[in-house]
Image (cartoon, rainbow, N blue to C red):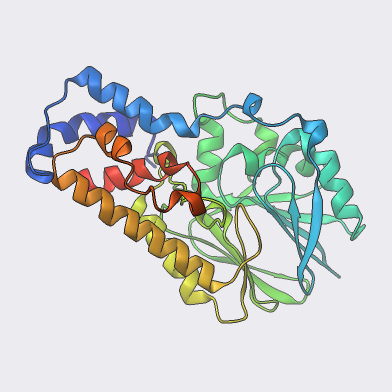
Length: 320
């Protein structure tokens, strides 16, 4: 199975330069070294190391009731989902290794039940950093097949994850856990934030955990070096919108528990930014010139300064 690696995207950008004149109204030619620099600029926003995080001893890990037996745990990194009931505990993601003792304390403030399953929504370190800790305590790790493959190879220039962190059960098609009195559907979505994204649907409780495809704190985050795509992001958000009803609660990868309307808002935002970037490309602007033009200046107050995590996916969508 071919992985959409950083090298794949580097080579694709080089190939795109030959066709760009017909695709985006004859933009300026670029030397190969310029394209390499462009590739590196596309990847740079995703290469945050642990040193860019706050000191672990200052992180406050808190647990919040969502509905029924479903909880959200917040700390530093991606939101953790938790199902608690007579069958035990399901965790969804687990943040960073240095926070696992605090995370466990938050879990034990609600339940002493065994942690039976740990579902990784994707491969990023702020969602899988606690895998070894929880696996050593008996949790079975589940994830999309590409999550395991990327862990085995290492991402963002880092070495492979420890074998103990790898999922032991992987899937490419939907699976169902019959657990804590409800059907828990775990299913892959199109390559969106990464190429290994999955949703978790607690069908009885009417709660969806959407991983980092959905967030309430910033622009959509498309990690092109790990297979994320703009069109997959729009399509995956539409899947969540179609699944959710007026009373469905959505747990985002980052941000507060939300509703269907917030997913609609994020989908429409991605489409609007795509439209604006397309207009700039049609004027012959380069990637750097588009950034300098600040096409989302009127949106940044709400969605923050990190357009650089969305723009690479849009740029590749428009120029491939």
